[in-house]
Length: 352
Image (cartoon, rainbow, N blue to C red; front, side, top):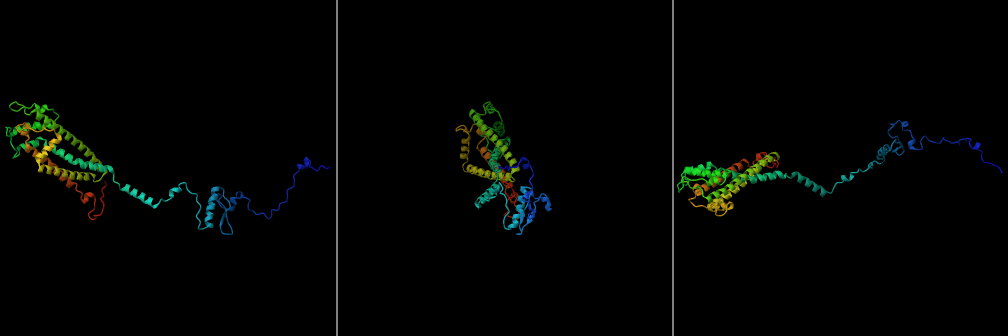
């Protein structure tokens, strides 16, 4: 039996290399990453390309994946001229989808409505100014009547009825000044209750003093409300001057119209029936029976019926005159509205 297995020495001997015929091999590397980009004469950072027989470019090499993608994107349009280059969809591509036409029109209408919407605050300030204006004028007119100047004018004007119980003009002016001053000062009922006439008797009865106390409460409350409305109106005017061009003018214009309506309405009622108008006015503010007195009582002798008729005329006249002047000064002419003289269709330039 022959032992043909190689000895260790034979196994360790180097074997001769097999003969390989490399004459038919080309210079092209087996893998694209094995090619040397510098040998092509191109930029080391750019891919090397060869043109095949079909006239299209093929990517041979790129040092990175991004470079290969860029090279392929540049090659594909050349192969298919009408084909769109491949692009990876963006994460926000869904936002680029145009909504339906109805939705577009609805959104456009909402935007236009929001753009054309006028601020609410200036509108509110204009309305408040228009409402407060006639009240303020009435309060100021009442304050003008409850003054010594009006009292002196009434007692000294021609045709004012005299006192049939003995008061002279000087007596009326003296005693009437106490009554008028009491309405606007902070004194109590003793201011009138302790007054005496020349004979030493009380000038005003207890019922008269009580009624004057009620009148004082109404007058002071009216003056306080008027002062508050004046303060609010000043704030509204300051706000409108800064936020709304022409807002003050529009507010006063509306207030003057409202004042004219109120005064003309009250004046018509007073002319149609003064006694009924006077009675109903007192019923609103005073308890029944607390404001009726005899002809010989001091209040009637100092302030007869003609005095209240004249006071009503003066109040209405002052308010009416002021409202007319305000109406003229705030009338919406073309210049005040910001319109040009030659373009009647031009929109006002002032903002609301």
